[in-house]
Length: 327
Image (cartoon, rainbow, N blue to C red; front, side, top):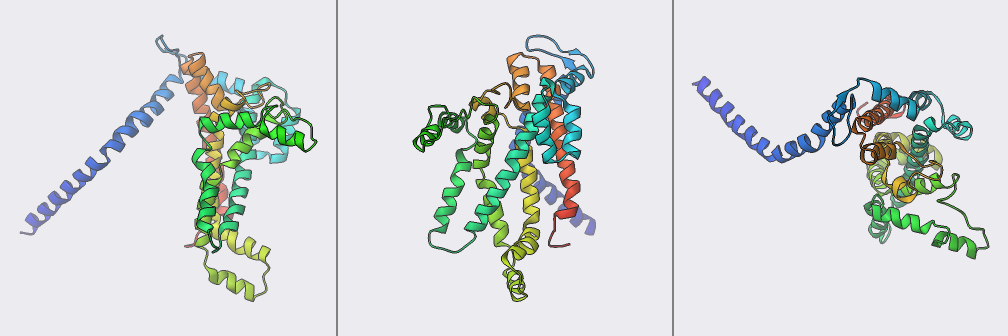
């Protein structure tokens, strides 16, 4: 009797499980076709000399060797891990090798956009973490740039704003200041693109705001009774309490910055003098400009290794500064 009940329960469970698989089947199919297959095929093509219209020819690690030499991957790998932001700035000033340009620009782009976006998002979240009239409307207005910031249309608009005869220079000229070549100068081109990425801080701001709402007020009250100043309460209460969200945001924004393509391609097309020529543009042009799919696949895996390295370093360092409530 008990065996019969057990078999009937297992049968009911299996039917329910089967229905659940029906519901997630479209996602599984989409994942297999749009993500898993390209992921595996790019790994295969990265070991071949393959161009569109020809059969792939196995070349072993030749594409990776060429990619590392031309992109300066090995230098970037060690610099990313062991050298500080000041050292990267020094490299920007002293390095003139074309082979180093791609990875250098991508890493500098990430180092400029990620801290700027996170600091701005946290500052705005702290400002909006209050109960005043119309605060929900203000929060919505601050989030709007993130809805449109990553589109091609906004990138084109950003380009028009920073042209020599654009509205930004018109304002500077009206103030008696000279025209600045934001897009034609190697000094200003990359910061101009970074500014567009920093402007899209809305999603990070929303996460920080949610984290701030969950910080127990009793902690602030106890610290205030003990005579702690605002800066002390922020440093010893706010930051530790929201550190998991900071960690997630840093990781997410770093990955996005290292994969950047749209803004650099639309606004400056990698110029001037390849000062904004990021790895995403190199990958795209090799694959869809010169149709060297094998070489482009190898570059994509080099980018993947760079991102994986950043991710592992962040996870390893999280033990030192990320604090969870259950610890």
